[in-house]
Length: 188
Image 1 (cartoon, rainbow, N blue to C red):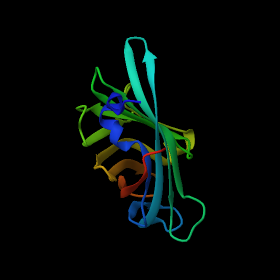
Image 2: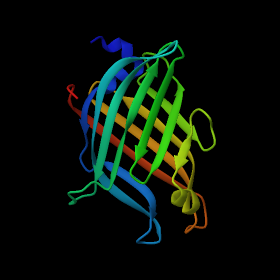
Image 3: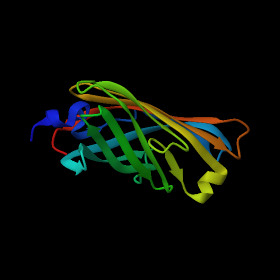
């Protein structure tokens, strides 16, 4: 398999892990306030493709990630989804769902050899947007998602912000997550 077909996603192929270096800053219902949660994480990216979509040709990464608080056996956060590369349009697309019944499709124009880029999703967009279940839409309305990605041969870093209008908090919440993971294996 020739990795150049995955463009700026090729460097992500494999299994990545971190120690307790991740930091989640979010509204904590049990505390009634914004608080910080350190976490460890494991992410896998498995390549597939091509996907012929009419004239569009996509190469993708099937990805799964999980994050654990210190001392806990069950992850407090998981995601499943795809990262896609459309070489002709120079689009990187990340589509994922979390088990709170919320989905996002984020994307951006990215150069084929880029090792850093920013993906965005906005509520109401017909292309790169956000969907929530009825409950979340009423009590924690998500309006925007931004993620900055960067990687080297052996590290993968992200810094993401989810903008949430939470009914239990008087102001808009910037829920942030950031971490740097190290490459464990190129085999996914």
